[in-house]
Structure formats: structure tokens, C-alpha cells
Length: 247
Length: 188
Image 1 (spheres, each protein chain N blue to C red):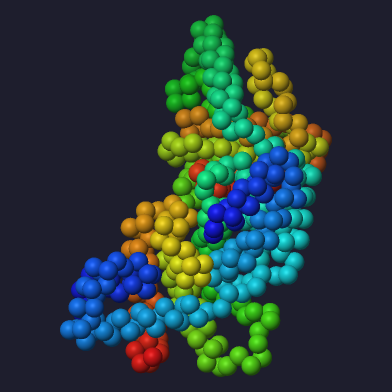
Image 2 (cartoon, rainbow over the protein chains, first blue to last red; image 1 turned 180 degrees about the horizontal axis):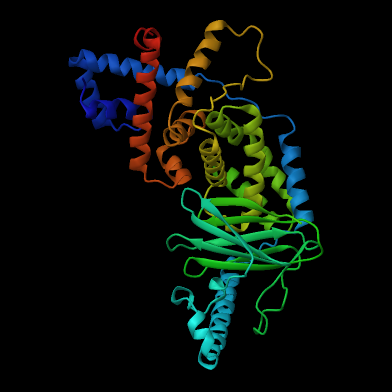
């Protein structure tokens, strides 16, 4: 059996990644080792076989099909391309102000309402919207990608829908949701300077999780079924899913 | 991809980001063939590959704001295509046979039995590779990506690219020999 180094040299040559010294080393091995020569011939032939598989033509309608989907997507929920840096800073500011405000309210309520002290689960006492749960039906959807890992908790209660994202590990991510404004309205915290009640009326919202957590709140419009298309972006990894919200 | 192509890509992306969705067509026209072939070699079914290819382009469009200029668009969309293909393969039940039905719609009637046999044996052997091994073989041999480009596409170190590629080729070779193709490999 040839040495691992021989395998490496042979394969590097196939990939045109062998420097002159490596080439000389391989030539020396091949001149004195029958097994290495056979191996070299095998890999050379394997390379020919792989290179000999012809490329396939995509379906003739591919360009039209893609562009139709692009235009449809743009028409249903206009894509808002934003300056990511300034948007991120703005969102951080909103989250920070909202977090502080809510923490203050919860702290006051905690002090003023004795029964509340007994009902608060210490694990959920961080005072952020992320831990706020709606009473109602809850289901969990796993998020899996090459880098993305976590769960989405979907809670529906009456006309309210809560999506809580919990990611494993710290990383910069974006959570994007597209929805039909005729079916749902997005609910952002009120009373926060610079954050109007519904700045994303076009049916697209993008939030950046803080501490591996993010939350989206929707209110149904009418009795019909609704859906939210979600896309989570982490580096070049993506996770996509569509959450169906039956009648 | 040369500088001119990269510049053309960046111009298309700039126009898309400025709200001109039609500018995306230039990118689809330029990359539909390699992206389709990457996915096809991964999932080995024309219909699935067509759907995944459309989905990869749509995903790229919807996430164009996340594209870092200075990187190659082809590497970026290949990455999306690879991830989607791997997710697709993962969602397929383990017992489900992998169909190898991507005969070209424009198959040459004079194609020889040997050519079909050759294609079939390569397909069979690649289909049995793990998604990680399959992805490096596909990028190296079907898109002619360098180690560096594969590393950029898959977000893994070049060293890992080499080791996966070497392992994958070794597995392919062993598998082909074990299946009785030693004649082709050893006496070519």
C-alpha cells in the first residue's frame, strides 16, 4: 500500500496544485514503486471519467421561471433593500430602548403587585418581550442549516400570533419575514421614539436577534388563513420556512 | 470568472439594490447553467434540480443586501445552491433510492452503450458519497473550481477542501473497483 504522502502527491497533480519540488518527489516515487504507478494510473483514469461527464443544459424556461418568481415576490411583498449598517444600528437602538422601557415597567409591576412575584418563573424574568408568552396553542419548529441552529416557537392566541426565535450560539443573524398585509399586521412596540407603530406596512420586516433571541408579533386581519414566509440569514447560510396559520 | 464578469455582476447587483428587479436577469442568464449543473450533480434528478435552481436564484435575489461586494457572486450562489441541495438530500428518507434520471433532453441518439454505462457508473458512485464529499467533487470536477474557490464557496479551510477531496476520490476509486470497474481504472 503506497504511503499517504503518495496519495496526496498524485491527487495534487490531478488538481494542478503540485509545485516543482512535489513533482520531482512524485516522479522519484513513481520510478521505483509499481503500486504507486498503478495508483497514479487509476487516479488519472478516474479524473478522465469525471471530466468526461458532459454538462447538462438547464430547462429552456429557467430564466423566465426565475424572473417570474422574482417579479411575483417583489409585487406581493416589495423587497426593501436597506443600508445594513445604519439599519442594524437603528434596530439596536430600538431594541435597547424598548428593553429598558419594558424592564422598567416589569420592575414596577413586580414591586407593586405582590401576586406577580409568585407567578414569575425566574428563568423568564429577564423582562424582555422575547420571553413574553401568549396563552394559546404553541408549536416549535426546528431551524437547521450548516451554521444556523435553533427553534422557532409559534404561539397563536385569538387573533394574535407570536414567533419567538431562539438560536444556539452567538452570531450575527438577520430574521426576515414576508407576509401579506391583507392577512396580517406586524406589531412593533409602541411608545418608542423613532419606531412608528407599523413602519413595515409593505409586508416585509427584518430584525436582528439580540443575545440569540428575537421576537415577531402579528395580529390577524379577518378570519381567513394566513402565512408568514421566514428567512434566517447567518453569513452565507440560510434557513427558510413558511408558517401556515390556518383559519 | 474574470474581472469583467465580476464587474458586470456587481453592476447587476447595484441596479437590483437600487430597485431595478429586471437587472437580476443578467445574473440568471450568466449562471443558470453552472448552478443548475451543481444542483443536478448533487440531487441527481432534473425536476428537483430545476425547482432547487429557481429557488436558489430567488433566495439570492431576496438576500442581495447581504451579498458582500468584493466576493464572487458565483461562489455566493453556489453556496446557496449547495446548502439547499444538502438540505434537500437530508430531508430525503435514507431508504429512498436516489434517482439518476437526468438524461439530457437533447440526448444524442448515437450515444453509445459504453458512454451510457460510463455515465451510469459515475452517477452511481457519486450518489453514494456523503453530501460533504459529493459537494467537493461536484465543485472541483463539474465547475472546475480551485481549492481556494471551493473553500470560499463552502466556508471551510483549504486544508479541509483537500482532505475531503482526496477522501472522496479515494472512496470513488475504491467503490468503482469494488463494483467491477477495475478494468476501466486499471487498464485504461
